[in-house]
Image (cartoon, rainbow, N blue to C red; front, side, top):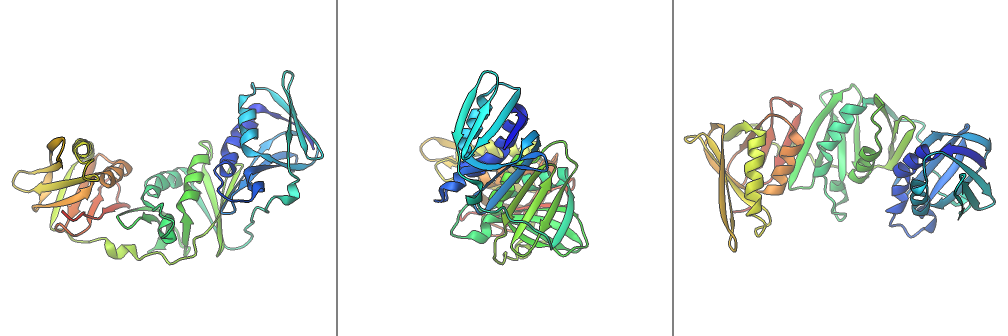
Length: 364
């Protein structure tokens, strides 16, 4: 293999790809490497941890074909340290020589045939999704997935069609986020690891209009521009979360999201001793929402904001979960609804009709 490539393009691709290998917890040493090979007169870079694989192709001037794997961390850090300009890569058996006018280095690699094959999907579901819609929807939902590996089903994000629309949903059993993504006639039910979707968010480019999604019974592939990300699906039945979302409420307050966020943040400062526990009171007579938090060693706080209120009641929540939902909603106004101290609290907005957040109460 012998080729020329710009430092800027190689550095960007390595930043997108190499992280999968650099955070790899697998015992197989080869998975700490990035696969570098020539494909159709372009340079292809791939990394995998056997759960997620990312490949990116970049333009290059190929003189001779070839392939090698090299340590991902060293390759990424070395290339990022080089000045912009043309790099020459030349492979001599298992040694990759990288040179510019001022720098000459050799990185010892491992032969490419030892690298796991990146899975391909040839049959199954195919769907094109506007990139902006997918990116925004994932940002508004993925945070609610669990990181507890003892309950793998909750570490996934569900893409599921209902009544002709594709929804994205995630829950960790303490809170739930759901967003309507688009209308489709296809029957879709995919449970995708949240970690893979976080990687997808990290590598999504800004200058592409759509993302192609291909899936079979075991894996899903996202193709966007010159980047491909493939991940295994979680083989489990997702909880019927729709049953958790109440449709009628005894108490509802509609107020400015920024004001609700501010009084929640202030209350959270006094809630650190109590694991973020805050008590929210909705008062129809006073037409406001007030939040109380107590820190036995530090003091206590009550903050309030004007609201359009129907019904009176109070509920105790985790302030972080409430702040996450308010941040993800991103609207000017928010409606906060519940049915007593032990029932789920739901956050919605007329400005975002396809978006729902649910937070379970704490026992006060």
